[in-house]
Image (cartoon, rainbow, N blue to C red):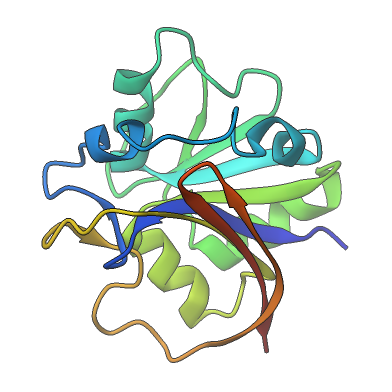
Length: 173
């Protein structure tokens, strides 16, 4: 069975981006190499993200960072298209049910907050891999927005990576 993983960085106060979606604070933190990103990506067969996250990915990188795997963008906008991703307004659970049988590897939920909230509500996340940055933003987009379903996790791994803490949790269902 395909595992669905939320792999994301957040600040100490649980923010995944500034209110304007900026990640500048994240790149100012000293890591250890790529903080395990390449190892994580070795087993990723598909990525799913929200439209705002997709737009930010395009801004952050000169070259599209996930060209070799299936990319899906959940959006409420009709007719949006990209050479890099399949845009869909399917419910997340329907999309996962449809694509999971054909995916070789895990499915990475990139974000943002609304996608994460919906995935937890539907109990679709199997594992959380969290890079915790030593910064407090005070305001921004929350990892778990208000109204997120109460969810319990089991810590399965934790290690430092430069100034980050890399924590892995299984989602208790």
